[in-house]
Length: 262
Image 1 (cartoon, rainbow, N blue to C red):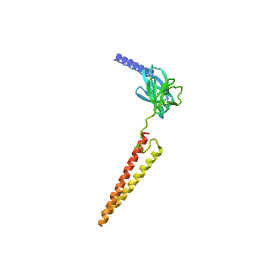
Image 2 (cartoon, one colour; image 1 turned 60 degrees about the horizontal axis):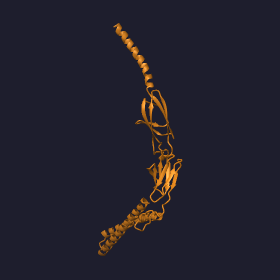
Image 3 (tube, rainbow, N blue to C red; image 1 turned 30 degrees about the vertical axis):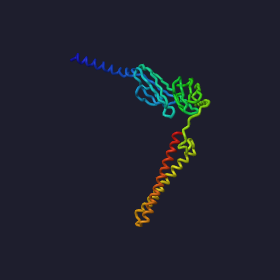
Image 4 (tube, rainbow, N blue to C red; image 1 turned 45 degrees about the horizontal axis):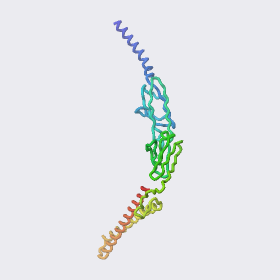
């Protein structure tokens, strides 16, 4: 019994020593990272876990290989590209990781819808925003059928405007005027069509009410001559209402046509 008591005492002392050392070992088994971004507020994902918005300080990370991904702040055109960094952490190591987001490059052209190539790869069609660091110091090729191609070396992230010269003898195809009555790309025509739509729709409503009024009189009268007259008036205003409503739909369709195929 004395030996068992001594053994038990030694065992308890050993466990207390281990228990005192264990927290220190746990503290040394992780590293720490600090994540910064320019501009601030980038959304940070560590491996597959969201850990917050930069700046982030003293984030505990287990030793080993990790992937850190930063997404630009929620502010319109910033959100066109994210950045990824792979790094290794050692026990007790402190690491600072910096992400820098540069405003994207805005490219426009005359004429519009010009195709932009980088190293023979199509990357955009004007007007467009593209990541500036992707094209910084590189040559972009601008092409469009019927126009002379142009090449531009990107020197800064200031908006880039490119003008292509039309090839001699080239004539752009134009969509035919709608029913050869309404010219395309004409503000006055669009205004006229919209006004016609509203007016004819309102006229259809009024004519329909007129037809309903005559129909009510037709149902109430007992005079044979009035029955025929009210019936004819009802049919006449019903036809006028249908014509006005059809005109409204046609003018609305023409207006939509001009807006979509502007």
